[in-house]
Image (tube, rainbow, N blue to C red; front, side, top):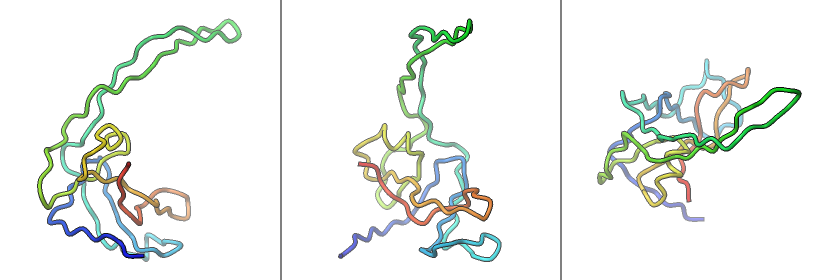
Length: 127
């Protein structure tokens, strides 16, 4: 299968985490294996603003638990599209900005022996 290759000049990390991209090895030893690429976060991250709307209560054993609906209202700190630049954002931000071809999320997380996330194997887009 012929795979699409996109050449970019800049990869901007708009998440609060360092992104480490590893190759397709089945198991990673983060103390031994070096990532192919490390992308440090920018000072400002793209965020999804939201608000909660109260809907009522759930009663359990004499305890009243408030309930609500969370509505995501807007995305902040997301630059305009620029030719040759892609942005790594959270899945939530990417899902709110459907149609933006320059937004990527981490795919295929890489974990260490304690099951802690240390990086990813791929960057991807949401439909």
